[in-house]
Structures are given as structure tokens and as C-alpha cells.
Image 1 (spheres, helix red, strand yellow):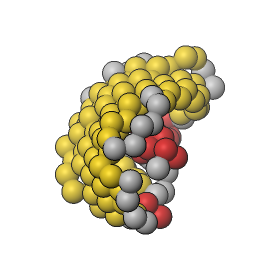
Image 2 (spheres, one colour):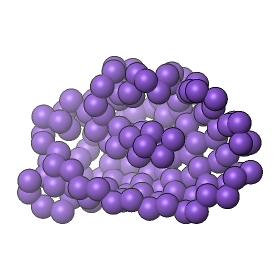
Image 3 (tube, helix red, strand yellow):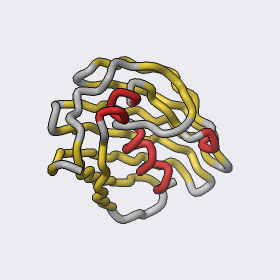
Length: 144
């Protein structure tokens, strides 16, 4: 599930595999970007807060192609709502996985050399109900 959450966070900004819906090109400048996320989990299981930082080179072509939001097929998610603009987007996915169903909602803002947003995941697992709240920040740190 953690890999999936990280994947969805990056997908919110750039996308990688199966087409789900088209959106306007994101207002992001090409270059090397640093993406950070902080995740808090509440529910029946005690899971410590988690943070992650990744760097990624975004080319203009990738930003232009990011007008398509994509989700990995194996996660069996369906896009049920999306509102996209060049300066941001909101979306909601419903996912069914092995032993767990989840609703994922996100809100991202694109500000040229910065991006920020949130992603909430509500899931019912064999271990009980879980709510994950992730804060995502990205910033352009230079040329690739």
C-alpha cells in the first residue's frame, strides 16, 4: 500500500502507464524537481508517520504529456471524478485490491516552479478501517 501511495502522489504530477482521463497541461517548469511527502495514518492499526523525498527530472515533453492522468493497471482503480486545470486538479479514485477497498481523493496545485497538494486514502482492510492523509510538496531545484 505504501508503494501505491507514493506512486499515486507522483502520478498526480506526471503520470506513467494506463490512460484514464485527459486534463489540461500542468503549469510546471521543466527541470530537476524534488518531491516530498508526509503521511499520517489513523485507524485500528498503529502505523508511525512516514515521510519521503525523491528527485526527478521533468522534461517539457513529459510535462506536456502529463495532460493524461494515469494509474498502474495492477492497482485496479477507477477514476470516478476529476476536475483539472493548468493550475491544479482534484480527483477521486475507487480501488479494489486483494483484501482491501480504498477511496482516494486528491487536490494538487501547480505554480510553475512549485507544486503542492493533499491526498486522502480511506480504506477498509482485514485489519480494520484506515485513513491516510498525505501532504505533497514539489519544487524545481535546477536544470536536469
